[in-house]
Amino acid sequence: MQTLIRRKIATIAERFHYEAPTLELSGVRLPRNLTLMALSFLLDGNHLIFGDPGWGKTTSAKVLASVFTGVPYDLYDKIEMRGNPQKYEEKTIARPDYGALATGRESVIWLGALGTPVLVVDELNRFSLEMQDVLLQGIDTGTWQYLNATHVHKAPAFFTANFRGESTNSFLPPLLDRMAIMTEEKYAGAMADYHAALGERQRVLCAPKLSSEALSRLDAEGIAAFLAFLDQHRLETVEPIRAAQREEIKQQIQELPCAWYDEQLREGHNDALLFFYAFTAELNHSEQYGCKRVTDPISDDTHDLAHLGCRVHSSFSPRSQMAALDYARGLAWLLGDECVEIDHFKAVLPHVIAHRFEFSSEFRNNQAQVTRAECEELHLAHQLVEEAHEHYRQGAPGLLNLLATLQELRGASRNAELLDLDPDAYDHPLAKEMILSAQADLTAGSGIAAAPKGTRF
Image (cartoon, rainbow, N blue to C red; front, side, top):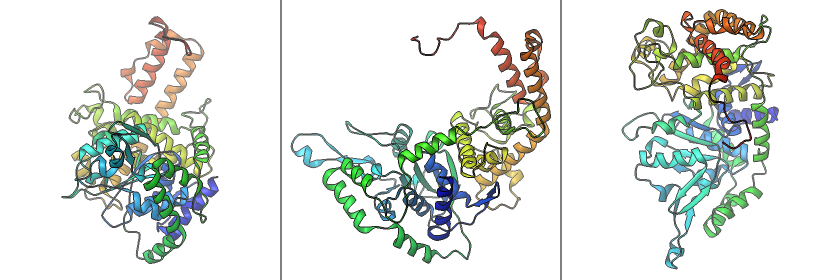
């Protein structure tokens, strides 16, 4: 299955939406943006695509959706959600069935975007905050509500957004946090033949008769008939990845091992998860304020200044952490690797944090004169991850020694020595967390016991 997915990505990049293979890991070269977009499809993720108007943000989303689902590109083109400050539910997700209302019966007509296997939303930051809240509820729960009607449709979603300008609104922060990952669409190079790509999309991915019939079913019989029709009729030119296949792939990705240290702590141990935990701890720890929160100013504590938390105003939420782990596992699976390594995390982390973090002015100023090849947010995110890796390289020996000590004390039941360890004697936030966690495990029995699994409480 990995071979099929990689072939689809390469075909899109070469024929339908040009992108150079800039991601190189495990001896495989892939186009970075399309690879991350493919993982969003496989993982049922919400993917945010930034860029200037006209550079192919929505095109890339519709092409990938068509190639992976077999639903015609021109159908996605006709029913995508398009952001506009004047658009409300009636023009975006549903409208009243006026024929039914004339007979005294309340009924709702759901719009076609909520019936495709991939949701495409164009110009997200042109929607009002009220409409962004409607989208938030829908993508978060998979349940769309209008009047007294409910429609259940959970699908991978691609959202495009223009860089901020006079015609754009701010983002609803909870909605941004639901975006698992972010990429940037930009100039692909003078060698890219856009006319050839356009012709290939029209020849291979468009099916006007199929799209017309699908829309006729939607208009005449509603979204249930539309869904049933699309389930039976797909493009003959592509091999679609069906929902059952995607679930099987997700299971394989979730089962991919990601060890945080080798049991014997041998040289060459897999410490990818230890790096990730160190990254998380640095971003969420503050000596001065107890933890990192967006309402506090940047700490000037001597210990804090040495860690990543002082580079950003926000923290690394659990949803962000889950996204980073899922996409790192997904990338390792796609490349055919047996387990997750630090390089997998380094490849996905900038795209997980770039749209979520508000970087400090000092960190921005320090990077202002540095040559960059991507938008400022992604550049800063890459620099932060590189700094995190350098911090980890310096701190890893101490963390690994502490892990060995904790393992030895617990294995020998030397509880008194374990309880005597002083977390404040260690500088790294993760070291403090490891000690406190080990000590809490020992004392857990002295409190109120949790209900055993499977019992009522």
